[in-house]
Every structure is written in C-alpha cells, then in structure tokens.
Length: 157
Image (cartoon, rainbow, N blue to C red; front, side, top):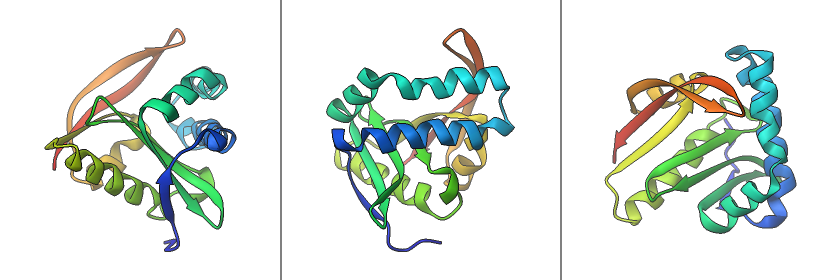
C-alpha cells in the first residue's frame, strides 16, 4: 500500500503520462481477458489526442501522483458516470484505484447525485465488486469494429 498519493485535477500538460498509462495498462493488465486484436484496438485509443484533451477540459478528470509521477487517473461524465479509471501497470493493487474512486464519489455527491454508475471491462469486475457496486448487466460494446465484453455497475452513495 502506498500512502503518499496526491490527487489533483488533470491538466493538458499531463496528457503524455495519462495516455501512456492508458495504453500500457490496457496492453498489460487487460490482456489476460481480451484478445490481441481487441487489445490493439482498445490501446490505440491513447493516440486520439483530441478526445483526451476534450476529456481534461470538459470533464471532472483527476490524476493520482506518487513522487511526482502520475500513477493513475479517473474521469466522470454526465454528472455521475465514472467514464474511466486506470492505474499504472506497475502500481496495481496498492489502493490507488480505491483512492481515485473515493474522490470521484465525493465529487459526485457534492454535485447532488445519490448514485454512481460505471461501464467497466471484465478485468475490473472484482474491483467494483470489492467497492460495493452492483453489477446491473453484462453487455458487449463495440469499439473500432471490435466487440468487447463489459458490465454496467451502479452504487448508491
């Protein structure tokens, strides 16, 4: 467990680290649950800088820093929808995701919402289960012509 994690809002200067974490996490952590073709398509999302810039500029987007290095991030859209939560591949299972989730939940409650929703990969099912989310349904999402098994989760705050 890492204790000296600092959570702050993301800036455009964080883009290289954020996209690197996204790409590397998908390629290493999610590769156990998805095919090589799916991982290639999914991780290529790191290259769409306009999408990442728009997220940072228009969503509640936070990063976790440890020793001046970004080790994770999360972003919320539509008020109460956790749109993404990623932790650096070398910092998995060290409470970083839990801290990001806790801050995201606090922000959602401060905005007046009583529920948090999330679409999550099958890799993240255990994480959401351990944080008291209810798996609403399993689904297949399409991204860049590939189908991806995922789940919709919800939690009353």
